[in-house]
Image (cartoon, rainbow, N blue to C red):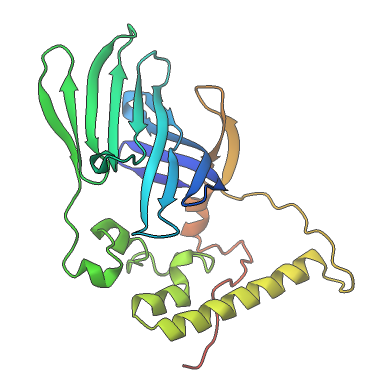
Length: 267
């Protein structure tokens, strides 16, 4: 993925493996994230923590984060180590996060504590001054009717008028089943999702073996908009190549894109 804004660029990739633990499931990421502030010539990299789905057998299911992640600054010894505490018999440990920020000299300059679903405070090791650096924004009105999404989450599937004519037909925001789900049309969403899956399965079969008969393995596809490179820590990561924006300006006139989500359905 890639997100660009004024003065920053956020890139990353993630491959997840699951591990069943009886009463819970761990989703263990093989990931890499990079945040660049071009005007400051600063770059930060980090991995993701393990996501755990607990109370599968009985009780109220909940999601938590577990493990330690290290945020590193390019060309610097400064770093931040964040510890996401898994739930123990002490209920107040749930969602707890603590951390330490180390300076160039390797000494602790600041510490963090709080809950990743509530707020996080920063404490200066020298002055003992404490300040809140992050706090969860309140949910929008009637959030329970919108899957308890935050304001940001509710806008992810939004198509602005200035974007409508430039989005490719492969953009997930044009999925008809998702639109039906947002409109609380559960039956229509299920039917459209099934049609989309059937259509794409048929396309995959034709791609893997266009001549018919015994099916062969599909050919290897290469990402159009991303390429591999080494980051400042010597790790391989996927980076955005930038060509997507140029093609979008031309409304992808040079590409024959598959109509993944264009499913005709009589309600």
